[in-house]
Image 1 (cartoon, helix red, strand yellow):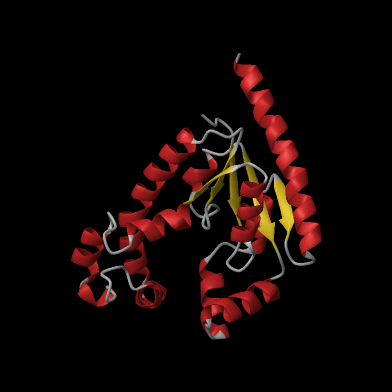
Image 2: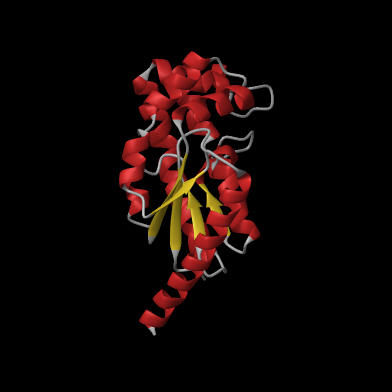
Length: 207
């Protein structure tokens, strides 16, 4: 059972998923709260009955899952709707992610939380925080290309998240993902060795 948790976050388009996959390739476990949210809002997802009763059938797609495009537009135009959605999803995500972290069998576990800065309770569960960072202009271009969204909508998403400065101020470690992939690989490998060593030290301290 892993007892050393690394909180991983970054703004949209920063490359969190790429970095998380590199840590996994090196031997870490991954608990991804965004993936948990997708599972909860799938056609048979645990959160769907409450979401439907709260927002109606217009936010459901043909497969019975949450229509994420419709919901995204709703929560960005109506702050009250965002609060309602978060009150349904966040307690479930916190519970499931805590269970999965406790079940991890690797020396340390990566807990990927897109809104780690905004959701302070996750920070209390992490031994260290690593931020995936890149310039805002890079974030915008990546999200526009990946999600086929207009620039104005991407900027609205960025505005709803914590700022780059707010993320960096809580960082124990920073991974620059605004440049070459080789540099990214090297930084992740360096941190992997560091986290494995720190995890071992924590185990020894408990003995």
